Image (cartoon, rainbow, N blue to C red; front, top):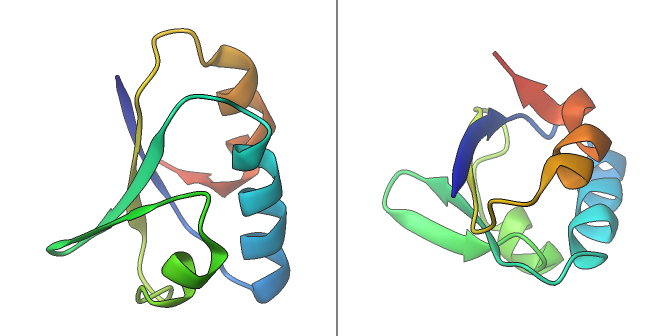
Length: 76
C-alpha cells in the first residue's frame, strides 16, 4: 500500500483524476477527516472538502505508472 497527499483544485482536476484512477484495477481510497471514499466515485469526491489536501491510499505495490500519471496532483 502507498499513501500520499493530493490536492484537487478544480472540477476539471477531479474529472481528470477520476478518469485516471478508473483505468486501473486496484482500489484507491481518499480520506478526509473521518470519511473514506472510493477514488473512482466522482460524486464521492465532490462530497469531500476539496479546499484542503486529501490523503490518498493506493492498495497496490505495483502502482508506479499510476503514481506517475497523477504526480501533478501530489503535494509534498
